[in-house]
Structure formats: structure tokens, C-alpha cells
Image (cartoon, rainbow, N blue to C red):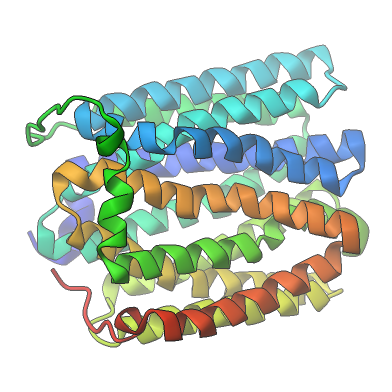
Length: 402
């Protein structure tokens, strides 16, 4: 199968569709919850607590979900999780219909969604290498990344527009999208390798951590993304920027949320057609530094067009590290370990988004939104420069070809 035909391969196409729909639903839900919570509380702290509510279950369940993904059918796990997320969105629908004015149940539903995604993310990531040939993995990773970026363009924009029609409307659309994703996963038909179901043990739970520690290149890539996303969590403060700094409504929040993904989608499509064949490590660090610079520009901007360009640049630079990291992890991890390593990867990257939102909310509560964004951008650049010295093997990585 030629690299350009990867999207014509039915199992991968269904996988891509599921990733798009699930991510669209999650992004729409995030925009709606963020606007709803800020409208009720007018508090940056309250926005930060949304991220914390999603982070805590992901953190607590990380070791367990990886072991589950390596023991059971990954398609079934993803289907069940997406169905649970659909039910959670349906509860938000009922809450909107009843006119909730208390944020506590919203936090509870955010926590349930976070727990479901803790199981879904590593299961879907571990499923990918079984859908394509090894020499197609970088192309598949780029297209898989484009699925997330497509969702992050459509999701926030749709979430902002639909929220303008009412919370009931947007949460209803989220419910439908999650169930469509679940149906797409059910349609994936492949011959998965039979995995040994070793007894659950303390050593087995921590084996993913041990494997990552034995691979300095993987450890460096994951930890770099962890700190970059943790410090660069400007998106958590977009409701503040949209409402109080740039003076737009929910539509403005939607397009601001979509801008990083628009840049990232363009970058991921470019990488899908023109993969990194040399100097991948240099490209990774250059992307993270550019991410930090773009964050600083956004923090200082008072013009929505400048803000959109900065956010799009931020997204385009971020996708480089995502594709490099995904390719390195998939190529260097045996199938029987992919669930556990994927779970650690989700903790490092996926949950760092939520923890980054919490950090940004707390910092903004203490110093204000603009200083919080500037601190994050500067911190990201400092971490990238430090990691270049701490992980020379990562910086020297040349090729991502299997």
C-alpha cells in the first residue's frame, strides 16, 4: 500500500473518523463548559478547576488504563468510553434544559469525561500501529494528528456558534458526535495480535514507566511536550481574552479556540505529504521554541487578528513535536507494551493540557491573564533550551522512518 493511499484503507479511515468525531465532541464540550462556568462564576480560578476536574481522574487511572489496553480488545475499550462520554453529554443536555446555575455538577461531569478519555486515548493510540504497515506509520501518525487538529478547528467554532443558540443545542450536538465516533470504532475489522494476559501485579502496572526510562529519546520527547503544554496553556484563558481583553462574544471564543488547530492542521497535512526525513530532533526543538514565542505574542496582543495569527503559529509549531513524539513512541515500543506506554504518554501530554489549564487559571488568578500567558511562553522557551542539553540523543535524532 503506497503512503498516499493510507486514507483509502478502510480500517484506518474508520479510525480517523472516530478520532475526528470524538475530538470534535470533546472540543465542543470544552468550549461550552468553559463559557458556561465563566458566565456563572466570572472567575479565572473556576476555569482552572475545570481542567483540574479532568486531570485528576486521568492521573489517578494512568497505570491501570495502560494495563487494561494491553490485556483487552482496544476497540471495545474505545467504544465503551465514547459511549460513556455521550451519556455524560446527554446529562449536560438535561442540566441545560433544567437551567443549572451550580458549577458543582458540571465539574463532576468533567471528571467523568476525563476518566473515560483516560481509557480511550491510550487504547486508540495503541490501536493505530495495527492498522497500517510499519513504513506507513509516520504518514498515519501525521493523518491521525490531522484528525485531532481538524476536530480542534471544527469543535471550538461549532461549540461557540451552537452555544449562541443555547447550551441545550451545543450539548445535544456533542452527544450525537460521541455516539457517531463509537459506531465508527465498532466498524473497524482487523486481526489484532493475541496478547498474553499476564496477572495484574504491581510490577506490571509500573512496567510502562520502566520502559520509558530505559529509552532516553522517548523520555526526552515526552517530558519536553509535558512541560511545553503545561507552561503554554494559554487556551485555558481564552474565555477571559474573548470576553474581557478582545471584547468578543461566544463566537470570538470559538474562532480563538479554532485558530491553533487551523495552524496545526496545515502543519500536519504538510508533514503527511512531506515527512521529516532528516534532522527530526532539531525540528522538534525549533518547533517548541517557536511555540513559546507565539504564546508571548498572543499574550501581548490586543487585536483579534494578531491574536489569531499568533495562535495559528502556535498550533503549526506544536504539531511538529506531536508527530515526532508519536512516531518515536510507536516505532520503539513493542505491541505488547503499547497500551502501558500510551497511558504514560496520555498522562504526559493529554493530561498536561488539563493540568496546564489549571496552572494557567491559578496563575491568572494571582497575577492576571496577560502575565500568566507571558510566564508560560517564556518558561516554554527556557525548558526547550534546557532539554537540548539534558537529552543530546533526542536533539541528534535524524530519521523517523521505521
